[in-house]
Amino acid sequence: MENIMYIFPQRIKEGILLSTINLKKPIEEIRIVRDRPIIVKTSDSEHLIKDTMDRVIYTSKEDVDHIVCLASEHSMYLKEDEINKGYMTLKGGCRIGICGTVSYMKNSIAHHGNITSLNIRLQREIIGCSKKIVQSLIYDGGIYSTLIVSPPKKGKTTLLRDMARVLSDEKKFRVGIVDERKEIWGMGDFNVGMRSDVLCGCNKQDGIMMLIRTMAPDVIIVDELGGKEDAKAVEEAINCGVAVIASIHGSCIEDVNKKGLGKVFDCTVILGNEYGDFKIFKGGEEI
Image 1 (tube, one colour):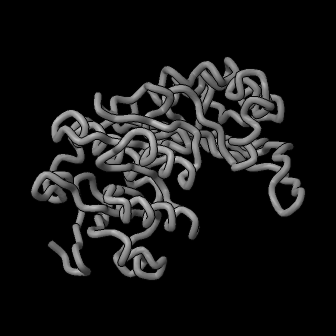
Image 2 (cartoon, rainbow, N blue to C red):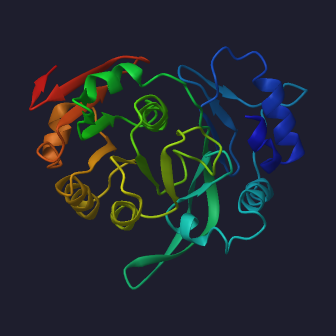
């Protein structure tokens, strides 16, 4: 939390610190929308940010512009590629989702401006959270290609980050990570293991093949598979003899089959609503 406070105007910073001092669970999101109250969310509650007079703090256009300016290191141009994809990533892996006015050129987003909404998602490490899952996926010195499935905010990225560390440091695999949105490794802020190589900010299609050609990984880890091109790159890696561990949004094994990924991966892990709650499927059967 402390490493992102620099992006806020002073009155908002003071309000956040004052209003969250007694929270029992870690903050997961800070939602800021122009001309509306600031909402801080934990896993089971949300809180309006207030000032020292117990008045709800509303954000202005100037507040939003201030946050965007500092988050982009005073240069929107430096973050243009990220912003046009709807986010910015801060040092430490914290991602800021962005909404505003989008302009197109030749069927692709050319500009994302007049920013009105920000969703600041805080990242964290839970050392050892993946050990049970990793142990179930190891076989005869190898690891099954595995798809991690859960709805948003249920810990997919946190799990992948720890899986990289466990596979690298404890199981001694050579791990390649394609960290397209700079959330798994951050910018060197998270421990992903001493045998892990990271391509930061690279798209999955390019990154997967670059790692295979140059770093000889035993396993490649990627977050949030998108369209058919991502799935094709994963299939190519597996056909090259490299295991892949990836994540997608979903809630059940049927969601995996609908997206045509059931036959690509050896195993599927469905994360539950509670920490440590999961199911593992192999060949369509729960194990």
